[in-house]
Image (cartoon, rainbow over all chains, first blue to last red; front, side, top):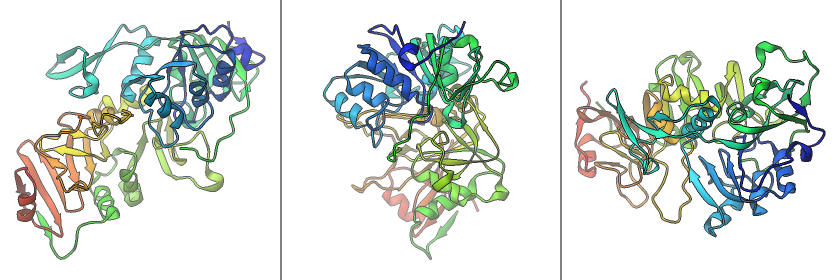
Length: 228
Length: 219
């Protein structure tokens, strides 16, 4: 059953040190700022964070990095004009980095939720990111073997949830949310609104509640003017 | 081949205009971050091109300003954008399935180097102190049916960027079909590099400056 948590601290309770945490969002769109902030307050350490990026500005994922709670970042694009928190930690050797092509990152997460043991993808064949990976030629084309990325926890921002945990998203804030929700042992979702039972049209539900464990209502994070 | 010797090299808008001109009607197109984004300004409505952004949208409209800015509606460069009638949203695995699955007709990317065989280098300079960041570049390069590159023909140090073999780390193998530069448009074919148009120079001059065999496109 889905739990509707009363606050974000309750929503993220029990995240163990050393956990792999899938965090939705592309830049700031769809980033579950309130949940990430609650994880920072929880003090959980030695985390492996999976996100498309490696934090923007000084809030959200950047704040979690700055507090020294992240051991490793798995992402497609760490370097941005406002990723200075990550950049400094990386150059100082204080955080590990695994760079994954964005589509391989998405498919590895999707595969975890779909029970796929591994898959072959053409992306990155012949590049430095193929090093150490098995190559198989199928119908004359080369593919790389890629393994799923499973989370102990997924933190997702959606627009609205119902008491069953069914989710709808807003615009490009959807991004990694639906695939991350299925890929973790514990999926925690922050939403703008929890609507009453029957308040979501079943035809428009994007993430069915079977993939969701805890929901908490929060106000959307105020955007910083240096959005990048 | 057309040699435009009555004019100088193209400026950035000139390059973007020609890329836009050459995108087939009704294409689904992804424009890379930076220079390629300009191509959108020159697409004619009658071309009926649908823009894809890899963070989960088809039917992307122009950049948003003022009250139209919505933090949940951004492009791959994380710039606020707008949605056009008929737009759709989808998650990341679907978005990249559109590329990998061969549904995306054209992507336009920048590049550090392109090799005559279509190899692309555009994600990493190879500098030891650079923080590697690939984003969706490899997926686009490998997945889109046609990869158009927009770049200057020569680097700041004067070295050619259309080369026999890339010295920078590769993004994708044999994936580039056309290269738009300020001096010429190149088609990379199984028979070699074909010059379609030149701007402020000639095929003969280009052949002297590039270490790649060139032929002129048939009239």
